[in-house]
Length: 350
Image 1 (cartoon, helix red, strand yellow):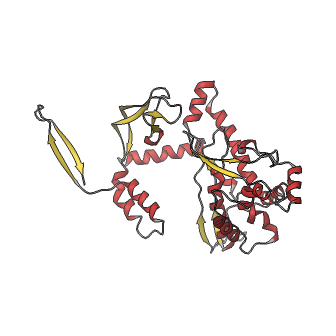
Image 2 (image 1 turned 90 degrees about the vertical axis):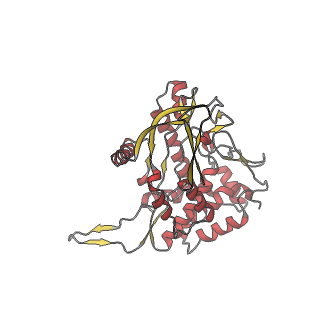
């Protein structure tokens, strides 16, 4: 068996962790994280996984030889399961996913297997029983629900967090493992402008497709905790947070230089500009001073930096956090401007 991109060591480690104290009623859960993504590799034709970097996002595309079942697709949004391919896989000693996965996924849904446990339960006599288990909050980065559907890079990361969620449940922890949608995005806005379709319509359609695909993979999310950043009940809290920042004097208006894209009609982040062109559409981008809201996170630089002390995080992650906080000590130097009396340029240097 050949594994490309996903090392054999990581696959075996995942399987060992997932099968720890495994019972017969949870066989599908234990092995879905490795088998679902590598099922085609058990046939005589090896899968070849290559990595592309489109202008808009990172993607993993699976290329397979023609000897694989006809249901295999490059895009997960087109993936279907048919019983004939499952039967053929089972005859070769493979994993009968079309039989096992729907059966246990329905069981998990019916029995609310992954529902977040209540930490406080009020009994009929009025007494309150508190859970004595440790807590674990396992949060995935919410995906942007594009019209293209999931790509292989999504479940790759979600599999790791799902395995850890299972591990902590099996080691007597109360686990909160939610999922949601980072659903505000420039693609939806541009699609609305080009087609006249309201973003709410296309966003809801894309979310439904993403949800269907994630549920097919059988991840142990508590779907009762599902949230979309475009939900009115979510947006009102982001507005509330902004008001608190404003009241504290941490949100102010200032004229700053930004990346303005006339064609898209919006300001772009530095990482959305490549060689002077927008990542989406290759439109020209210019630097312009615009008046906008600025949050003074620098006011909390010391507290943010102190909060990193004692964390058992990888050194690369710690360095990235320190650079994001951006605290540095140095001095300001003033330079007089030749020919302009009273004018000076102030430069900060470390």
